[in-house]
Image (cartoon, helix red, strand yellow):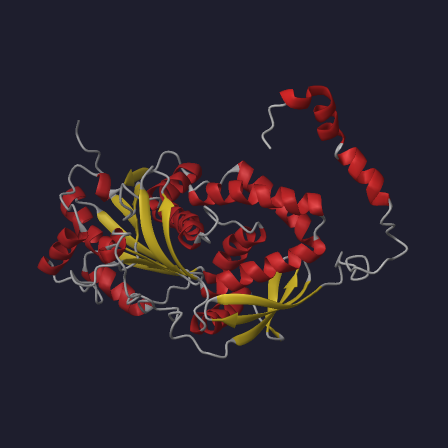
Length: 412
């Protein structure tokens, strides 16, 4: 079967190892025009002009660099945070939420430029291929998709091969080498590290890859207090100073990172069925999630809170799996936004060697009654009422014991 040919391809470009070599590879193998597109979602790893210069030097006809930080925070980070979504209970989805945004604007550029295909550098073993391609399909089901790692013409089989390919073409890899081979993905919300020694869960590593966070051992002995103000579930002030979302995250990253908060070393189950290990740095995100949950514990009623906790796992799976532009995900957002109408207040925590210790929670919508929740008798709660309540609540168990006796299948 002949390989389909394309005239103009928009490549999701980061300037990292994979996408740096894909520009010349596309030209060599598809004889097409390549337009590079880079999204600034807060990674700030390669300056914009240097990124453009590098893309053009490796063969791109032009290079778009879009500042998407505000949109990333307001339309992707905050909705995910409001659902308290954690994949497999730990991962704050830093890469997962960025990919649909990046792919969305890639498709908009493809439409503007009249491109007949789009391309990405995600491998066939990871999650990002799904996140990119589901967005492509949702926005334009007719667009051509070139995924080199899954292409028959692609002869590169490892990151070492990719480095060799780049070196033969004098492509600047900005410090990536066969001795420092971690695969990294960063944005305003997090920085992930995979590869190298991390591929072996039975081996200890020295956290030599960290860029946003201190190690637990090197974190300050005294710790630091942080106060966040929320309005309808969204952080609006840090330590008493009103800021936009981008500024809150950037400033809190420095504070929390210094105190080793948000450092995660996990083995996760990828969508394609395999397990992978990674080290994640999410300083600000970890503090914001915890503060948000503390505030919700004060203002949400029990049934709403419990239902939201169950839904957060479904939401996390959808986001992880690249199902961002779906009716179900948007319906979940509608539910979350309804619950967040009362999530307004102030939370103070102490950050100490990776720990987040609550010291203050307050809200004008608080449902916490210190008299009712204390040990002293109050008019609104008669302890004798609990007698009848427990009789009714325990009636099924009592009935089972009466009816089955020793024949019950319950083990004691």
